[in-house]
View (spheres, rainbow, N blue to C red):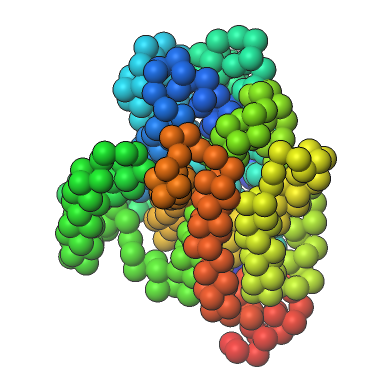
Length: 483
């Protein structure tokens, strides 16, 4: 895929440039991230209101990510068929409607159903926005484009924890969802003005059977993992996992025969894409667990108020924002492979250090460690999200974006499940009725032990991977020599 292909793709829609598009897509991400981080901080308060245990509230996070995993595979095809602006606007409207239903929920079941509706909207917003951005940017600007895309969206995680703490401390938790309404209206307006209604040229048949099979497989697996973290549901969770695996195998057999499968696994044969999916998925186990574990850790383990816990959790988001300014220069100097290997180890070990946190630690030191965790982990995902498309042709960009985003959200959801499962397992082994400090420590070590295995896959990246994207001279020379 050459630079000329990207430039040709942008012809006819040069206005607005990729920075404007990135900011608009980031506004949608801001709304989603704010919602997720505010909700994570408020889980203990909501658990008391619904009369359930705090760990069981993980389903409120998982159900949203589950909906994303089910519907994201169809996002690229839907955007190609109905137009990016139409799909983007509709997605925002659905997300805001789901938010209103969340605010009106009288119990946990209704909340979960409303979160599923929210997820339907979210499933269309991010991959469609990313697809528009990738089609409008040249290869040499891809790292900067991803930074423009993510920096404004990181305001959500920064504001989310303190806003959540303030809401549950001084207001009703339902305001967590009402604040999405004005943000959604602004986003809807900006999309209407600036996003062009681009439609794909290829008319692929919709893979209805594949959509059903993949939806059942992903849904069963995720709810099976989530159920396994709750007491008394071991047999039911095993049943769901078995169903998920069965339908997953059925989907893979179906995909081999279908001319345009809803999830094109042949993309995994593309070296940089397949390696990025696997390594990024393992790393996201740790990233996905943090919004669930950290707020509970500080409130239940340290005895901090929701507001104080929220202030601590902002540290990781602040570190993420600081990273965006240095990512292009680091990748240009060291290249993708070396950066991903070294930084991945540092980022994962940083979160493993959270297992050592104790109430007598200075809060300033804890805050500083979390800033560094956010810095290195955010760099890792910026690199993964960019190098993944290094060898993807334009005609497969829609399928690749949907596929990549599906696994991204799937593993974030699995991270919550794994974190909750590890926490509950430790509680069971230690005979604890409520999570204690050593239970959280075990959970942090467990999820980071999984993510550190991504190092073996990072080593499989070519030394020239993404050389013309990052501008890494040594890598570019090697790339030229090979070809």
